Structure formats: structure tokens, C-alpha cells
Length: 338
Image 1 (cartoon, rainbow, N blue to C red):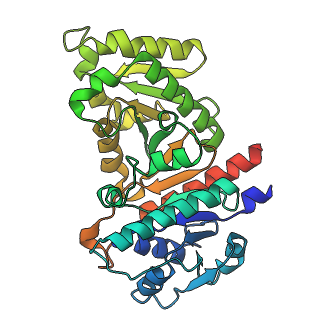
Image 2: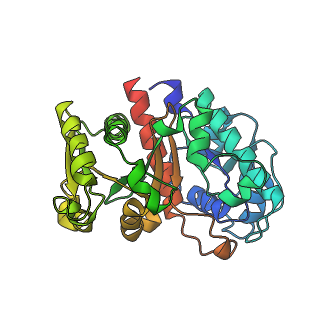
Image 3: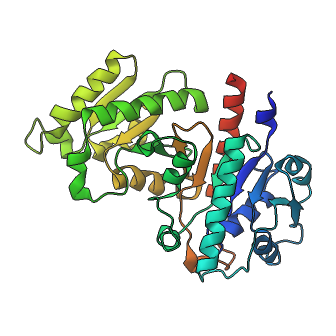
């Protein structure tokens, strides 16, 4: 195994007023039963120290100055890189917390890009709060893509859980704009990125991609819209010609039934809610947001900051644990192929 594979994962704190610090700390406490590889947090030592006071006595923070120290420290406490920190005010987001979240994100990305970390896991942030301090990206996915020198259009968001993987073709846009944004070329380009990533990062030799229809009943031969016939079907034909096992267009109302889910490895969906509603309904507490198409590994829990329950000790760490575990597995597969 290469040194890169032995490197710990970098975890960004997320907004300190949200549940990010709590679920990161809880993930460390469950590190053995969850079989998590060593990770460290990029900054936030003060916050995590304060979080620790509300947790089991077995929790402690170990300051480190170099990611290489994390592997040894991990058995004894949660490694936290550097002194970057601030007060913990759960449920009370403010400008200082936004800057801490942003700085932690930048630091974690730099560690992953530079190879000091084998991948990165991002804690949940409040996009509106970040925009107030000059964060110019729609979300963390676009920031990480830019940090890696990858065009945002080539960074694909996949939501993954124990029983389902989905990819939204369009993301944070109005539903009324979706039909005009979908094209045969877009479907083909993103499906190719997904197929390559499932092979490289998830060990699926011949990924099966189910492509959802845009319209009800896949348009019913044009009676409910022409897009599935004129745009989606040609994309599927093109993908099959280049050797990708793509099927569809599948009516979305039947695509996610238990029987149908057994027939594909990932569902490529036309818009945000078409992809996120089924994954959150089935795997909310274990859902992971994975960015495909990057030179680094990046995952994130598929939930937000949850300011309303922050600091109350009721946040479920399942999605954070799943995100850390998945990042470790992806990093291991990449290293094995290097």
C-alpha cells in the first residue's frame, strides 16, 4: 500500500453552530465498532473541546501539528490540526462561525490536494451564511472542484446509501428551468463520469445506470412531453454504443421500488428532488454525498446544519460515520489501483 493510502482522512468542521462538531465527535467515539480509518479535523479545537464536555468521559481532543501525527493520536483522542478555533454556540450561527467553517474547509481541501490526507469529508455548512462572508460558490461541491482545478460541470454529485445511489443531472435550479437545461450531451457526459467513478472508487466492474424519465410515464410517446423521446432516449442509445450499460428512460414513479432497485447500481435523475427524495426516504441517517470526477476523494453526510437541534445531544451521527467510512474505502481502492 502506498504512503498516500496510509494517510489519514481530513474532516472539515462545518458550521460550528450546527450539528457538525457533535457528529464528528460521536464518529470518533464509535470509531472501533464502525471500523473507521484514522481521521483528523482541520481546526476547531476550542469548539470540539467544548463539545467534549457534553459527551462521554472517554472523549478527548489531541492537538496535532502535522497530519502524519493523526494515526498514532487517533487511538487516544480526536486529532485536531492546529489552533484554529473559536467559541461553541450551538444553534446560534454568526459571522465568526462562518469564517471558521470556511477556513476549515479550505484547510481540509489543501491537505487532500497535497496528499497529506488520503481524502476529505466535509461537515455541513449553511450556504446563506457563507455567502455573507464572500463565499462565491453554490455549495461545497463547487468549491472543492475549483480547489482541484476541475470545472464544476465535471464534478458530479452522487447520493449514496446502503440500498440506493442516485445522481441529480441538474441540482440547485428552479424546476421550471430543468427542461431547458437537459441535453443529450449533458446526460452522456455525466453518465460517463459516473460509470468511471463507480468502477474506480466503488469496485463495480460494469456499472448499471438506470436513467429516469423527465416526464410522467416517460412522456407516453409525446403525449406528456417530447423530452424523453428526443433527448433522453438518444443519450441512452449513445451510452450503450460506447459500452456503458444504460437503460431507460424509466418512469420515476416506479424506478425506486424494491424490485427495481435490484436492477441498477445508480439512478441518473433529471432534477434535484427526483434524486434526493428517494435517498432521504430510504437512507436518511446513512446517506452520503459523494463528489465524483475529482482527483481527490470527497464525501459529506447528506444532511444540513440542523441548527434547531444543535447542542441538544440528539443529532444522529450515522451519516457522518457513513461518509467517513465511504471516504476511507474509496481512498483504499484508489491507492490499490495506483
